[in-house]
Length: 307
View 1 (spheres, rainbow, N blue to C red):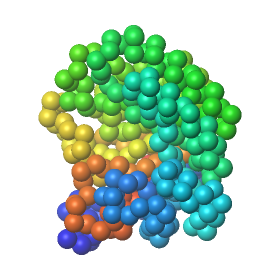
View 2 (view 1 turned 180 degrees about the vertical axis):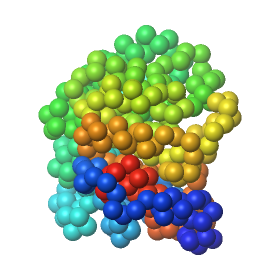
View 3 (view 1 turned 30 degrees about the horizontal axis):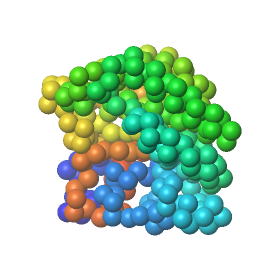
View 4 (view 1 turned 45 degrees about the horizontal axis):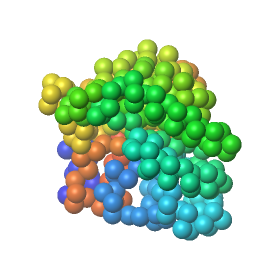
């Protein structure tokens, strides 16, 4: 299946036609970054960054461990040559597992944060489980203490971390104790952890958690660290699965409302298309990357954001 055929099938092409290039409003501090969900693992760093530039992205997600092997000077030179911004990298310490795992990660955290900052990566993220084997207040107390410790390292290098909350019902089932899975509560937790923390506004999880535009406005631009972009079909909560997403503009999520709210508050940062399960496995990495970029551009331009 070639890209043009798939665009017609997905509806992304028609969305693009409805979005004139002369969208209202000047450019903002938002940029679209290439995410691995679009390439199916077919391209590795640093070719991943080169693909982002070739297709026309303004930025790229960073594979921290691979970039470390290349070294800071090589990585900085690559990004400068390609004229790419870094959107984020994963927080290089697992703070949500057992204490031994956390403590081991803390041994190398400062070196990794220092490297990330040196190559221009000022934002990180970590997924917070929506349920666990541990009672909620006990887990909250443990994670709060850990993230406050992590925050001391992040603050030294002016790096911030977003907590990704997970909304679909099936991710909260099977474990005895629900944890934090809605935006408003996760923002509150981030505030308790310190100024180095905020949330990942993954619109898929925002939608399936029942969060609202008011939650985005209440968070404010300082607590929204990253944006992950996809879309959803309308279906009963019990039928939703995390890896069955749509491209931006194909579903029922109020993406224009979301981007309108972000634009009005003056939010700046990366938008990473993440339509898990939507890109055909047989599609090339380049065609998958183009689909993600074009669908994101169409929606954002309709919202008056020039990207």
